[in-house]
Image (cartoon, rainbow, N blue to C red; front, top):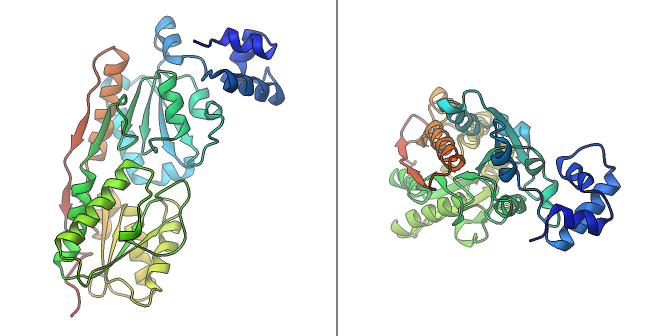
Length: 353
């Protein structure tokens, strides 16, 4: 097994210098840090074992929450806010520092240890919606940092908290199909590291990096298949991010289709509300001309009368935090699948004849 001492010897530096490089300390120059990382990569060294250090020194009282994208997006996303609320409501974490760690969606595959998530000293991490093969996930596994996933990644050695996204997706689409809608527009979160431009048929989409979105789209296909497919046009567009501006831009493109949708299905409430804003600006009535349905049941959904799929976001955060505490105490891993529910409000209605 390659150790820090081996890296120091191969790089011709002190063991302290290697430690400083991984902790992000200014005691080593950027050039020396890059040299150390390059030597470490050649030797197959993935960094100091933070979990092991914590066990030797005692709990340091910090839990990291890894989220994809920027911090600005994370704090604006109501679903992330509710998950964080659930995590901090766990009594044992009352005096624990919670560190929000942004993870680049297209992280440098050759040097994942440079991520802020792995430079920070934490007792364990909660990962929210990260791709299975993201280098940060691989590094966390290699360094044996106690970790729990919310929704994804979905890997054998990581316990997770989720909902049945496939069934929830089917429920979402079945609702508008049951109202007679046959031209469906889907506004999706990113399906990969970068959102692909333009409209695509749902049936043509195969490459999806995150487990929960793979399952959600599978549920949409299940609903279309159960309805007989005939006469159903399901068109998907990816939003660049989970924010209002990205959602509005995506919906603008949907409405410019020569055969625009009579129902818009969004994979988040943020994008569903963005759809309602665009339709209002274009003087397209909701739900008389276009129905809109979201996902999450964030507080904004009730405020605007949005039909949506309710998932227990706070409860997911609480459960993930409890499982992480169990891991830190050496108890067995476990998994949890929470229920979802269709909540019908005023944003959906029968299709026009």
